[in-house]
Structure formats: C-alpha cells, structure tokens
Image (cartoon, rainbow, N blue to C red; front, side, top):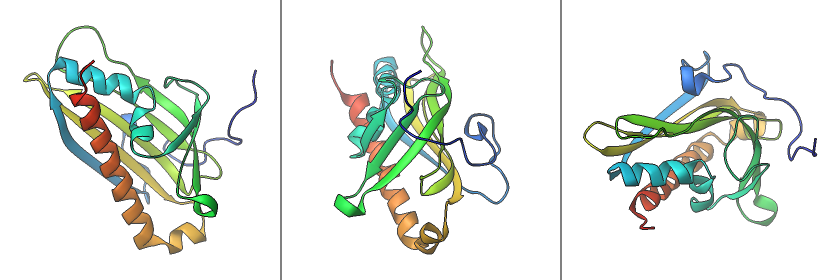
Length: 181
C-alpha cells in the first residue's frame, strides 16, 4: 500500500450521519439547498464534477487527493488561505452514491469525515438531486465541532468562512450544470 496523504483516523462521532442521519448530539449542523440547473444532462454534469473533486477546486480550494475520483476510503487534503495563513483540512471519504442509468428522480454524491489536523471534527456531504420535473438541486450538509480552542475562539470568522465556502460550492455546481461539453 502506498503512503497515505493524511495520518490518523476519523475523529468524530456519527460517522456516516450525513447519509443516514441524524447528526450526533451537540454538533452544529448546517444544511444548505440550492437550485443549480434543469434537466438530466445538467444533473449528470454536476454529479460527474462532484465525484471528481470539482466542487472543491472550482470553489478555490487546493485539493490533493489519493484518487482522481471520489471513492470510499480515499483521503483528501483541501486547503484555503495564503502563505502562513493557509488552513489544511484532511478528510476521508465515508460514503459515495453514484448516478444510475436512466432519468429522474435520483441523486448522487458523497460524504467525507475529518481527520486529525482539520479545523473541525465532523462530516460534510455534497449531494445533487434531480426531481421528476427535471429540477436539479444541490444539498450540502455539514456537522461538527471546533477541533481545538483556537478554532472555537474564532466563532464569527469560522461561521463566515463556512458560509463563504458553501456559497462557492453552490456557484461551482451552477457552473458545472451550465457547462456545455
């Protein structure tokens, strides 16, 4: 086996809760829904991009992953910031749902959990849905607690950073949905 890009084990309660819920007690949970496009082709573009780390990359995060596509058990280290102010966020994929042949309704996505060194202890999931009418939506679910006193002390800034990154994920999904191949 090759060397892992991040050390340690998943470090939170409720592993897999973003797929099967509910989040563990005491964890701050945020669920964001947004319309991103229309039609099966848009749904498939978002699903394919999502499962190839494109939401993170298009959102401006650096992404170093053990696999070019999202697979259970793969580790990824994403990061944001500049120079000495760069924050690294190591995670491990805990579940994956791939699109299936055919039309609507269906969903695809994945969830990953935090590893030691991440500013939060918890899980985040990215899912794209297409309903019977062809409406494509994204749902981003995140739960967690600060990993240490430093991140807990940055409460307002931490929440603002989370909202900003979530809005960038939504914009990335809208761009993927609108892309013409």
